[in-house]
Image 1 (tube, rainbow, N blue to C red):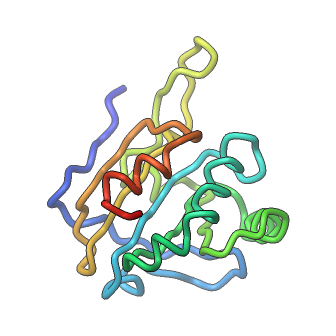
Image 2 (cartoon, rainbow, N blue to C red):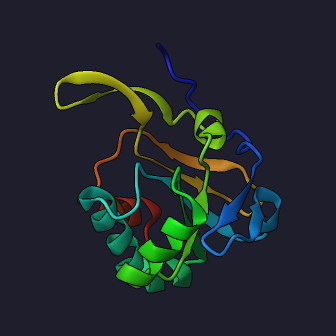
Length: 157
């Protein structure tokens, strides 16, 4: 199975999802500010916690450079609220339980997990400009060290 891949220069696929509080958030709501959308497999798992806490710890420098951070997973809003509370996350988390948005971004599909091919979330990050155009499409990223590499790529100190 080949996954669709989005390339820099393309318009990010539109979506409307519920956040950790149950409020609907649409891509159109995000226009006007640079946005980092990151897709992760599951709230409160070790790798996803590491990645989320790295974003949390880098949020000041990212916001200072004009970026907002949004995490997207298949978790329900109540679990996302628990995740935010437990780890002191200060950015929006969105719920995509049917993985329709994951599919639109090419981050749902076959991947290797402990030597087996499984279907699931391919940890990935997209950077969007103020108009919703993808400037960076990073697929198959590692949870550990990803935020530091992303900051370097974006020139954020």
